[in-house]
Image (cartoon, rainbow, N blue to C red):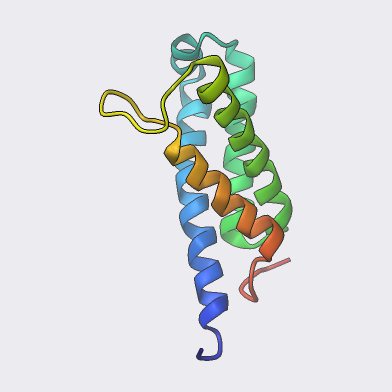
Amino acid sequence: MALGTVDFGLFFLRLILGVIFFYHGSIKVLSPAVVAKGLGWKNSFVLLLGIVEVLGALSVILGIYPSLGALFLLLIMLGALWYKIFRWKVPFASMQATGWEFDLILFAVALVVFLGGSGAWVLL
């Protein structure tokens, strides 16, 4: 394997994870009432969740304590999986709605970044 290939792969993994969480977190930050209504949660909780998602995403993308950012994203995905599987009874995959397979992938990627390291392309 060429020198730097693993570091590039880990950076790319961090970038994709961060972009997805930044997008979804931004929606919660910009429109917490809309999201809260759809989920049946309080606006303040959705706003806090969105802020954590955005900050975790930036941490992972920029490489500023990316393991810590990945840990927060990992915990968020544990919550999402718990809600989808046990509370809302969402199937693994579905043609009518997003199953929890997407959440499982995000959990796995966050776990890799948290446990496997972030590569050499980090700021802190």
